[in-house]
Length: 355
Length: 231
Image 1 (cartoon, each protein chain N blue to C red):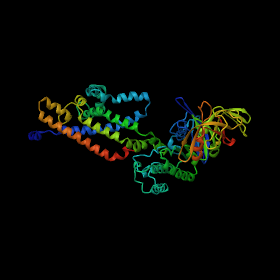
Image 2 (tube, chains in turn cyan, orange):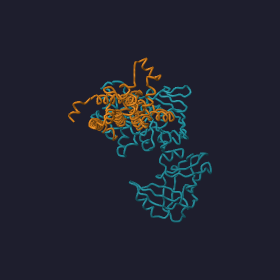
Image 3 (cartoon, helix red, strand yellow):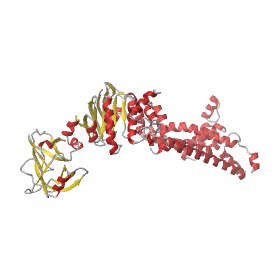
Image 4 (cartoon, chains in turn yellow, green):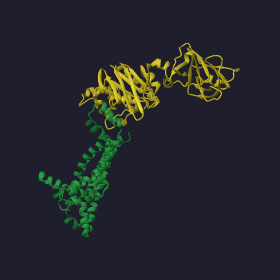
């Protein structure tokens, strides 16, 4: 159970270069919309043709530009789930499931899928007569009934509202953990990826930036794009000043770290939850402090959220760059009454990022 | 009025209906086929092919009649070939009625089918492909049913147009009573004789037929497509 992808494709002035391998796992292609992740999936399915490269599914070469191999989608044995499910609106639930099962599929097989995906009683309904969650189940059932060797899921949850999404995420996870196949999961949502996937491949502007274990990706992103998509709100341009020292220009801060600072360091990040705050009286806001990893910043505003609050600080005198801190509501409200507060970014909260 | 009904020759009704039905059936398949081809063609081929296929709709029917005569006249190479090899005569026959009506009505079918195909969610076709369906199966099981509203309205318009075709028909098939005399030709003929009673009778007949068919098809379409439409 594996897939090897190494493809290139140019459309207008967009260049896609995708190279990765995945085994029997749930492999996420994570990236902002328009980054080329869906295009990669379409190339694997055979809906789009890459300009050059090679795609191998479970040892079968389905595309090889050098050998002029390009199997049509129906011979690739891939299951593709579309964002809006692409159920056939003219066919009943049952007919949709049967559509990928070849000529005259045995009815007990069809019933098996209907039951497995909890669609009993809906067999004769049209897609327009069932709910969003049920539609997703039909799409899954239809995909699984066609006996694919690999599953390609193209933003399967983004068409659902947040309550249903949470529920379907669980169902999807349960189903995917039972199939024992390679699953490629395209998404722009870090929550989905965090809940469902094993490894994360970050796609940025048509290129693959990093491939990391999920937990490693979220704990320790390596590039600025990875940090952003993993939810890091505070990012500053940075410069290496010593083997263990660096300077963050946008924040007006300098740092000492136990880690080796990479030579190509370009940015530094700090998660809004992990920044510590202190009351201060003496210090002048905006001035770089003698102590590393610390600064004094002016309180700009308080943004209340449902369960916690976001404190927005001005990093430097001119006030252009902001630092965002997330903390419980009471503490945030207390800090918000101060003119300035002292912040401390511990070494372990600091993300050392390359371009 | 009673006199008219007693002495009336009903053959124009039969000829018009037969012509309309046959021309619609031919246009239905040719129109869908042409639309499918044009949708998948490259942009340049598309522009030219679309122009040629739509031309009969925008030109005066007499221009189409002129070209049809030019091609099918038994004094012309293709007309001679048809007659010598297959024994088919088009000019001044019922076959001419059908040909004229088909040429004039075809663009309506083609354009409606094409618009319907272009509006179809492309992912439905991709889904069919990844599910292992053949292109032929995708076309008849997914594309045509989901393009239903456009195809049905195309069929209605094609039939209505074919039923009332006059200009090209009169040039190609002529107005031979009992053979090629359609309702619209009959109306024109009796008007020339000043027989407004007979003309009026046929006018009412053709209006009733056209209106009845369109209403009936709308009812059928409304029933079948309600669910698909809003999806």
